[in-house]
Image (cartoon, rainbow, N blue to C red; front, side, top):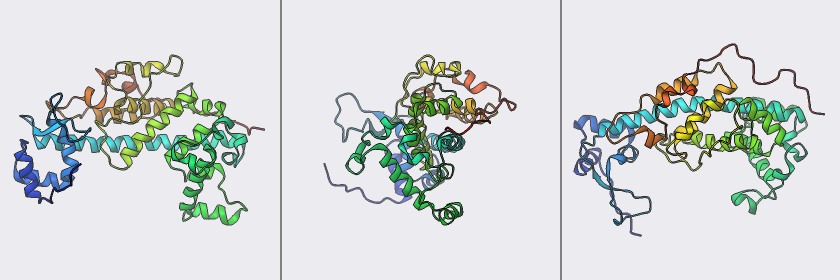
Length: 351
């Protein structure tokens, strides 16, 4: 390794540096405004696909370097700006969908596990004991005896941070309990904690929730929650989304796993299952299965249709979309505002 010796560059020198690398930056004023809007390091992540690929066997400065610093002929800063603005629209649209999904998941966890008791989330007797008592994943094994203990620590920390909320203060001051009842607790849990709580549920409770999202296999739905959470985090932290390779792979969907399999059949033709499009399709499927009146899938399809036009960008390669994706039933189906609720309205407590 070598010492980092790169020095600060003014906006004007940043523009000149890009020009020296072969990037057409257009007018000086437009280039300065683009760098001021996005920042050099962020904006050049969107122009990176315009750089020349390193030949096989070429020396690399790191295992993550695939391209040289030289831009291909025809590369423009304007195309990079278009990609950055598309990504911004995509994050906003996706985050809105994830928000609806998260609210639905909160309700389903409270309504399903809550049938077993107001504090069922605290007692492994109401959970899958095999999963709850298993060694916790990752570094948690050195601090906690089991997966449920690890989850409890995260829940109580999030409850502690939420004590400034009036509804939390009310519960703790009125009732003789150091814990929140489940239907209150879900309101202070982040998406990751909700996902981990779902994984702790009994098989029957998992399946009951999954079916309301159009999934007959509760374990499959648990894996989907992990992938959607990754997408959610990239959106929440304003990370690059459109061409990201995610750390979670969407596995092939086994026959019989979905209530409406025809809506996701086209994913069999997806070029990459670590790219974002397959996960966006899963999110759209879950939302429209849960709420047939939802129009979010139309909003996302409209956003995806604005993918920037450039000789160096390709939606199927960069996002993992399928040929003619916009004609698929998943995106074209008409919302059904009069459809029945996905959850029975007469559920009784579990004795």
